[in-house]
Amino acid sequence: MPTLSDLAVRHTALDDADLEWMHSLVSDWQLLADLSFADLILWIPLREGSGWIAIAQMRPTTGPTVYHDDVVGTIIAKGERELIDTAWNERRICREGDPDWSSGVPVREETIPVRRADLGGEAGEAVQRYLGVIQRSTNLSSARTPSRLELTYLQSASDLAQMVAEGRFPFSGAEPILVRSPRVGDGLLRLDRMGRVTYASPNALSAYRRLGLTADLVGAELGRTTAQLCYSDEPINENLMIVASGREPRETEVESGGTVVQLRAIPLVVGGGRIGALVLIRDVTELRRRERELMTKDATIREIHHRVKNNLQTVAALLRLQARRLQVPEGREALEEAVRRVGSIAIVHETLSHTPEEQVDFDDIADRVIAMASEVSAPEAQVVPRRVGTFGVLRSEIATPLAMVLTELLQNAVQHGLAHRPGRLQVIVSRGADRLDVVVSDDGTGLPEGFDLESSTSLGLQIVRTLVVGELSGRLTIEPREGGGTEVTLVIPLPAL
Image (tube, rainbow, N blue to C red; front, side):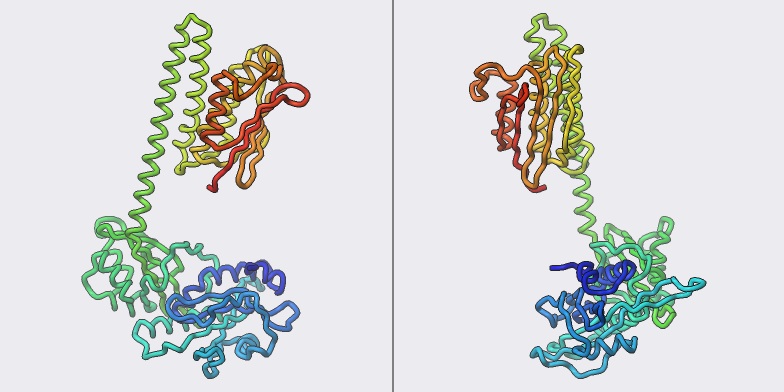
């Protein structure tokens, strides 16, 4: 399905600033739909002026929907929907008209002109630009005598609709709304101009009861009441007073007695004056508790990786010390190889100790393994391995064996293929959507006569084969390189991150 931007660019004359306003409106108009108990459709005039196109749609979570099918992308001609044309031409909210029964259920239609306020005129005066029309459709099949809550919702929806028509909603320059921002159904307070509560929904009142409120919330000054509950022995959060008074469109959190409540203020500015505010309330106690548990778990995992790295480095140091005491060259060489193998695993755990997830940027690990390989090459050879391409982010269960594989292959190339001679050693990486291709290529002496990977007695190659085929479920081939040398190819499947 095409996006809002796609439809607007293809069919309308909206500029970048208009599109930004539309995105801000659509990102927050769930609030209007829920307060209205109605579906919303955003219509924009076609570029040639012959009709309208629907570029966005929202269904209410507080009532039945009218449109079970998506209408985004629908094009209608001028005159086909009279209320849309009237709202656009007369620049006003249209509520006249009888319910429409064409769909089999009674539907009340209203239209709201969408205006964008912009300080672009001379001396900075406000310039208004009309962008489109919101069609608000209410399913009347379950109509009944409204409760106090529903009447408050509808009055608030009417105020918000007027703000849309005046270019005052969404709020220009306001902080982005969080994905987990409170919704209408979480809890709603309506404030007057002085910041006193005129209505509290049951969910909002329950949230304040959990904060420790024992008195009635209606009639209380929200900022002072909230501060007394949460900041009795410490300085008052200034942001709280701004949010709780409804003066600015902001969000904040308050905590008392182990309960955490999120507040979001929506100032109501109609006809040029502030008439009050809506404050949405959400109890996020359990959410914050789980987040703290996850943070503790992540910190524990990172500490474990750090300690494993330290232990591996201790083991490597002990092996290195033992190698220095050995008089047998073969034994010393074997221990030095073990030191490098342990070191490659320690590099992965060191990287994991700095990241909150069990994923690592393997490029840094590969570069450190490559640097280790250059250190063991003979001084006269002057072999400087290099990496071509990028590994990207890999899971730890892939990163650890792959680091060992690279260590073995690079060490083998330096000590055998490029022993005591200058040459070129490359690690060429190509990453696809579901696989990783790695080629370790050198221009050294090449493979011995009659080489066969399956029957090779080299411990390093046996380790490589076991890790690639057995642990990574990949493919391993070792072949003579065209022009001389050896080329080792790894094909490793990648699960989705």
